[in-house]
Amino acid sequence: MMRVLLILILIVVQAGLAREPSGQGPFALVAHEFAVRDLDRNRTVEVLLLSPAGEGKAPFVLFSPGFLLSGRAYRGTGELLASHGIAVALLTYDMNLFTADQRLLADDLRFVLRALPSAAAARGVDPDPERIALAGHSLGGKLSFLVAPDEPTVRAVVGLDPVDGGASGIDDPARFPRAADRMEEITIPKLLIGAERGGEARFGIPCAPREFNYERLYERTTAAAWEATQLGAGHMDYLDNPDCGFPCSLCVPGTDPTQAREAAQAYLVLFFRAHLVGEVGAQDDLEARLEEDEAAGLVRVRRK
Image 1: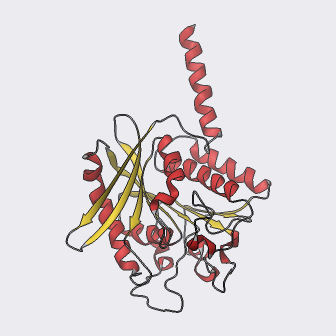
Image 2: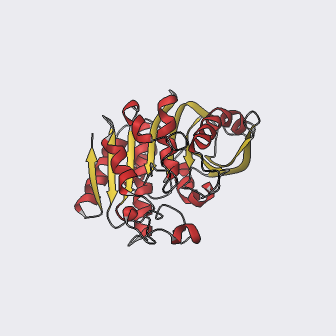
Image 3: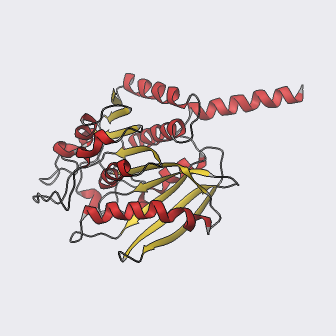
């Protein structure tokens, strides 16, 4: 009788986790900060690795930040994913206004993909090389879509209000290659979360110009793609602190940053549980959450 009761409790708990993906999962967290160095290219990437405690290989996500932002600015999202059994490497690239060559940054991401397993293993973390996903915000979302077609071990990719542009007023396809030109090559599942107000200008130039935003990327996909436009959301709502100082002050704020961020985090958790972890029923839970939020007037959804 006691065994049956314990099984029933476990089923209820697991069902609760599926229904409440924005809440913390059951795993304790372990954090490591370090840098990986590409000596051949003289490039360094800082890493904040958040992983679920315990033994065994963990699926993992490489998360790239927005332009001039630190991966640490998204720690809350990383901790949430790690609590659901998914290791997350929050990356911080060496870039400034004068070295914004996106080819360098894309190569940085490719290097981390190869360097992270051994760097993590040295710290007692065992990332699963067969279950890798890429994700990022703004420029970081673009980098994720640029790199995904070349990496056969990547199983899913997500962009949080990705911006497929370059330096304002500069048309240089070599320095600023277009992710849109590669979207048809990405056959793995793709989730594009967009901020409705990202295309609005606060000081003359929008942070996510509509001609280079998530909608343009989605339009170039062919299959296995979901687009969720968060109504009223601002471009910087996805940071732990959307009032982050000068970079955030340049963007039109959202009407409810906390709600937008937590909803986006819920979508991320369910999407990765479905397409990275391979959890049965997680995609149905994601669809149910999207339909619920769409009915509530919080999001507009397209699917392919």
